[in-house]
Image 1 (cartoon, helix red, strand yellow):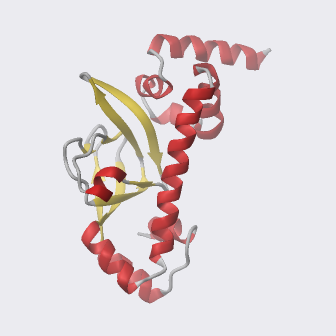
Image 2 (image 1 turned 45 degrees about the horizontal axis):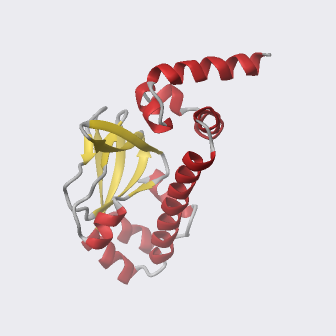
Image 3 (image 1 turned 135 degrees about the vertical axis):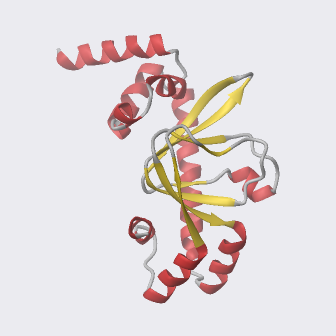
Length: 193
């Protein structure tokens, strides 16, 4: 709970009463490595906050998993379109390592927002962060090569290379695992010289 409160305090400060209301409104869940947190076809009525671990967002494309993003500590997760429009989701969320998340249900969020209006700011910021992240991912695929995307990932979230299986990183970058190996070798050789 302390990590969640610290994460929220990055966006908005809460007093003791508001923290107590928040604690009553959420549920802590732990997922084992590879366990699916949310799967396509379901209608989302939850928002998650990661306090420990790493979660992979992926899509099933003709029987193949395509990784779209990785969420780590301090990030909110939501199948936004499903949550907002009450339609079946097309995305899946899976714990890449043992993961601890806090779950906000839609019903409890409504109650919390009426009791703690400043939580609206948190909801807006979480939505804005998700939108910005999506825009960055799209822009990287439109404007950059796989090697440039690899270097960006290395510079911005280098710890993922220690936490996430290489096939997921390759999928996220839009390349095969073999191509990822060649890119890694090339980049590391350039950095050494």
